[in-house]
Image 1: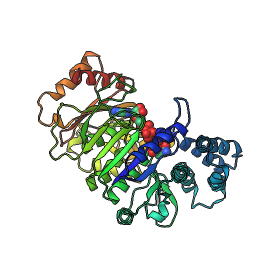
Image 2: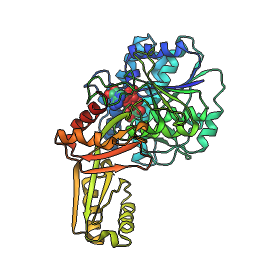
Image 3: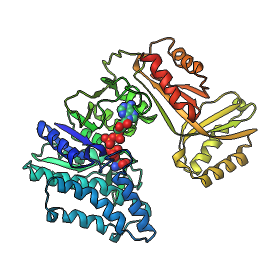
Image 4: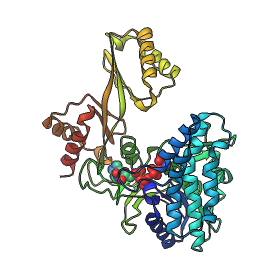
Length: 450
Ligand SMILES: Nc1ncnc2c1ncn2[C@@H]1O[C@H](COP(=O)(O)OP(=O)(O)O)[C@@H](O)[C@H]1O
Ligand SMILES: N[C@@H](CC(=O)OP(=O)(O)O)C(=O)O
């Protein structure tokens, strides 16, 4: 059996829903269907998840919500009308949307999570109704009933281990299950979501829990490309790649697949196939374990990401000082900040963060505390920072890969602020200025995929 996830672009309007119905119809082994919320129908459009965030904020501020509710509901009723679903059939979904402010939540974070989750919840219910209308043996399955349990972090939850056992019970039921992506329920029964783009994670959890033969992830591109198609025109489509290659590339900017979604797939050793809803006949990209994988190219892909910032600390004889890093890490812990990388020299240390964790106030407070406790000679917060990740199983045994990465950057006068190569030797990370990131990706891409 297969677990199949449809992204927001695949469920954005009636035409896209029709393609989804055709895809489900074409293969009876597609048994668990994971939905996202309706995504963008065109470039300037707004995702339903973003509308729901607006609805939640207005509710928190006790503002009038009539217009935003109407805007959200228009997205669902447009799809229902496309299929001539009667207003009576979808009325309970409208009621559910309107009732959101009347429910009590542990706090505003959980309120936000519950509002956001309804993008996927209403879409899953709508898809189940449409499948039933077309006489498919399908049903909507609520995460609470499924036993899809997550940790108590309202908007950045993690799956709980017992979920896998709970989901395994749904493997052999005869119906097609339509389940909402992006969220689960906490042990005390509140809705908590994954981070943005988290429906990919839901699909992977279902795939592991039901020991699926394949996890199909339907999106709006023919394949995962060797570079972001918004940066490089007509990039090379990747036919096959390993879990860890995709994990590194997703982490560093390949937004087509959530980096955390690889973990359940790896744990369950479920193959992933990223495919295009608009061209389901194409093979897409297959993501497989490293064992028996024979790379054809030196690099598989190059990604860039702008949501990092770096903290540079300089102090003479840092290498001789005991406890410096420990004190620094204690400060991060105290401010509840996780860091991504910490390359160091004899007299200096750079810490790279996901800057979405910071508000300006928090950043200032943390830097002041570091100055007070560690008294560095120099402390610099570098906001203008991008990370470039060059990834490939083929780099492991290849001498000279580094030169092929740095030479084209030098030719374009792109300065490299940091280089980090992991012990696995399948990835090289570079730090550049934000404005140089696209040029760096393009140069490296063309060096390896002439
Ligand atoms: N390397 C890449 N290969 C393919 N698509 C990529 C890549 N990097 C970024 N993308 C972007 O990811 C988008 C698909 O992801 P997303 O918008 O999350 O889809 P969905 O709506 O299906 O969840 C593509 O339209 C593309 O612009
Ligand atoms: N709808 C959620 C979760 C998600 O995974 O969406 P998508 O499949 O459209 O990336 C979001 O926008 O974050």
